[in-house]
Length: 151
Ligand SMILES: [Fe+2]
Ligand SMILES: [Fe+2]
Image (cartoon, rainbow, N blue to C red; front, side, top):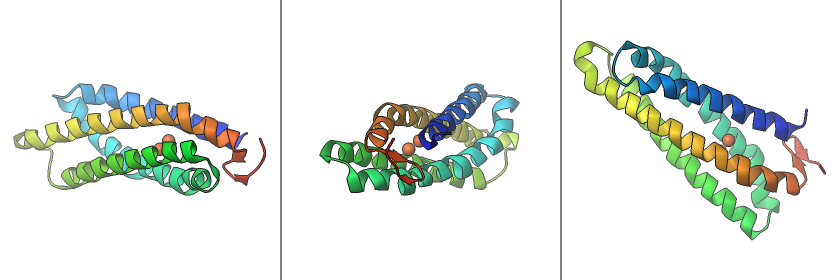
């Protein structure tokens, strides 16, 4: 399968996971949201962090080295968004690692749910922007994710 398509499908999987957690997080009070926090933590600190790293090393670098001025502008904006997302994930991880989910710690759980909702929204907006702006550029430049290759 075309590597770009595979990457786009990965975006689809991320959308699915995110909308699932978005639903869970919408139950801001109650046990359901708290139960979903370890899964959300894994999604943020492992899956999403890996996804961003992969894009930076395999996709952004190629466009920065070979694209025109307009293409580079798109990448710079996406790089900024990655930094903003990673900063929020750091915040989430720190709060997640910092204590229990005991009933008396309701404030912390609420903070985690709020942060997760913020990160999810940032990721959804960001991934849609990539689908819309980045992948057409990448394809136009004639690359697959395995290296230089005319489409
Ligand atoms: Fe990205
Ligand atoms: Fe992405």
